[in-house]
Image (cartoon, rainbow, N blue to C red; front, side):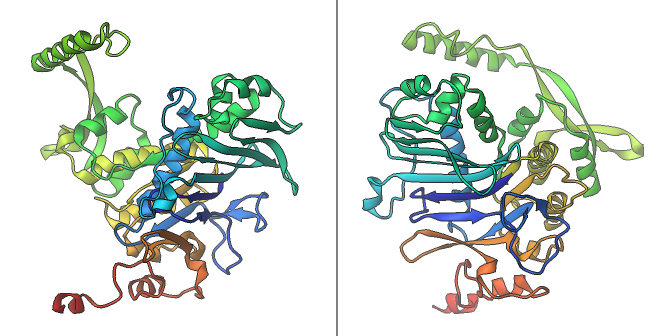
Length: 424
């Protein structure tokens, strides 16, 4: 369960900005909230929707969470000694090139609240910390200042040994999981389980390769059928690899071996057949017709991935981040996805949806509370500011969509009417 995320000096985020999930004290519907003893209000919201104009930094927020996850998962295993830490500092102010980027997160795992974060420059992790908050008081599990480590008495395991094996450009949490630290491996797995859907355009080949490893969830097909896509099922089709593709593979192998030697560890021998996904439709006379994904609409292909990730999140009670939820999707489909996460009957395990969107119609979604609406806006210096609707005085029943489009809450492309722009 995600409680808070903050980022500083990453892409368009200059000063520290944070997103909160604890339910506010506003008088609003409560039936969709997720009970949580770790926050003062006793509940967190199941979904957050972030609005903002183009280039306001919405996608950069999703990227910030993804960057933190990637550093946790791979900084120890995929990094090389002395290599650059893959961070993306704020570029519109030269002072920030030397300042560290900071990522922090609060979440609940096994009924315990954890607070984890780190700071990093291009060259090294400058600080890292992990605390647990089982009740009211915070317990230190470990703190790190460059290559100096301090461990709390509540963290058992081969801490000192792992600390000596942790490179300056990798996270201790990443190293601990790599070397089998029992307690920290569970924290590591929290990041491993986070789901993301950032691709706005999904080609047929990409959609097929993403879903063909596992069978498509029956709930995905039911959803597609319910919104009149014409999809009633699917099948897997085994296809021969073309001779042209085999020739290209052989040519690539020859050239690779010429430059770097043996390639068995890089590019194993390919298979002669592969599986493709075809969706089933009802044709003339009731006959079932199977269509390759390249012949499906962009929205149908994108829904395959978004819904698969969403149902996985709902089944496992984990967060899922979707960038541009409304891209290629009808507003009713977006509304239905939000309703799944905000329904206690469907979302029994406390999954959370974090989505960016331009679809203002969703502001009228009856299952959304006012504290589930956030905005991203660029300052005059090009830095993203992230803030909630609750920063403004509103009442239950207010037309939030109209107020937003009128510019009352900011985060819109311009304040003047379009006609004024055309006349200039």
